[in-house]
Each structure stands twice: as structure tokens, then as C-alpha cells.
Length: 70
Length: 302
Image (cartoon, chains in turn brown, red):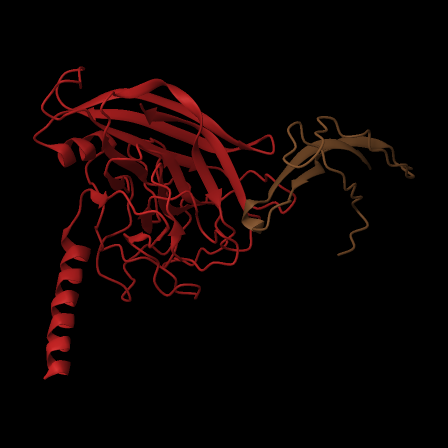
């Protein structure tokens, strides 16, 4: 479902990957946008999702504070 | 004749069930389960589920222990054996970096004096937990955190007995039975502030030896069977200080959980250092909240 307030970067990061090569670091994930009113740190600005499970009750999401355009 | 015979057996079963519901306060046995799946043990399940009059029967005292405070309630429950508090801790409950409540975790043993080994009670320990939740927003929905299932690790090869303590401060009345709900209070009662005496306003619904909670696996029904895991006990009870399903006088906010206690023989005692990831606090999404597990630290038997 479209949500223009968020940008999604889909990429696996896992220090001990079950399948294939481990990647303890994500890449730097950058977004360029207009922020005419500046920026600030806000709660729930970043969402990290672990959802590669058949049963959705095993999903884990973590919200973090982060920089956000005002 | 065959049908008459069946009817009489059913009637006897119903009478026994009534006796259980009204009379058997105190610990409920939660025996070791066979591998596979198991039904949850009914303690005080919700009635009128998912309707405006969803409630619990406060006259059902199955699994309750009572007294002026948790210590008095446990002391009475294990009498004439003594009760010794071995350890006590509290810790913030955090999710996404926000503190959504406080966990209280205690260890008692059954016996006399501080030494619980080599006594007549045979290394019987009681692990107890209770939470007090707040209304802090912990994700963008702004909703308060709700715990539906409280899990902790237990010894997997021996039977467990479990009970709960509702508190003594400003409690809900325990009679009459629903559906005659009044004289339940017309406004939200104040639960008190002392963790030893504060009241929970939702009762223990079910018990099981599993680490699956409400709506786990995804799509399962409220009281569906669970995959057995004898190393964990599940206490199903709702705690939420700002619960979306509040419907006074049928259902109230319960910022405190009951005291949830489990008794087992722990042949080599308990570990005085609380262990990581031995307790799981599960929000299953009863009112469409985001499912969320919090794995945290707890006392465990050796």
C-alpha cells in the first residue's frame, strides 16, 4: 500500500545469515529530498523489519528515533 | 437406554465442572505435556467474547490465591509449610527504546528458615511475576502496550503448579455471577500503587506449557490449541492501562497484571543471577494492535 511519508529500502542485513553470505553491515542507505523547514530528530522515524518467516506472528519490527524533515 | 445413559454421564460431568469453577481456589496442576499440540487449560476464560459485554466471571476462583498481600496469599497457599522469599527484582519493560512498564520478578521457596534444600518440602520453589504498564506510545499507532500472554521458562521434565493473585486494593467484587453484572463499579477503580497489594482487573484466562500466545500462529483463534513446549509456561491474562476493549461495567483497564506464580520442584535450586531471554511478554493484537514480543530477563530454576 502506497505511503508517501515513508521510503522503503529492501535489503538483507544479518551478521549470521542462515542462507548464503552474511552481511553484518547494511549499505549506507541515502535519501535526498526537499526539507524547506529543516530537520529534527523524531521518535518512530526509522522502522526496521524482520519478516522473512512463513508465519507473520514471527515477524519483528523495531522503531527507532531518527532524523526527519520537518 | 443408550441415550439415557449418556445423559446421566453428561449431568455428572457438569456437576463436577461447577464444583471446579466455584470451589477450587489455589494452585492448578500444569503437568508435563506430550509432544505435539495441547489445549490450553481453562482458568477463567472470557465470556461473551468479542461482544460489547465481553467479561469474565469474577465468582470463578479457580487458580486464585487470596490474602492481604502476595506474601500472605502465598503463605496461606503453602501452609502448613513455611514460605521464604529468596530473591526479588524489578526492571523496566522496554520496546523500541520506550519504557512501557515495570516487571516485578520474585523467587520464593517452600520451607522454613532461609535454607530450602534438604528439607521436607524437597526443594520446592515458586517463581512469581507481575507487571505494571503505563500508557507510553511505543510505535506510531500511539496505542499503549498490551500484554496478552506472560511466558517464563520452567523446568521441562517435572510437573508445575500455577496460581494467580488478583490483589487486595480496591478489588472488583466476586459476586454475583454474570450476566447480572451490577454492582460492579460504574467507573474505573484505582488499582493502588503497592505492587504487593495492587489490584488487577482482568483474570487469568488460561495456562499452558507452550511459548505460543494469543493468535499464534497467525490466524489462529483466541483459545486455539498450542504447540507444546514443556520448558515454558504461558499465563494468558490481559494487562493494558488504556485498553481499547474497555466496556465498564463488563471490562476495565488493568494496568497491573495479577501476580502470576508457578511452583515446581527445583532439585538444585534456582540461579540467583537472572538470565537473559527467559521471559516473553507478548502483545498478540487483540484489538488489532501490532503483534510484538518482548524477550527479557528472568529468574530461573537450575
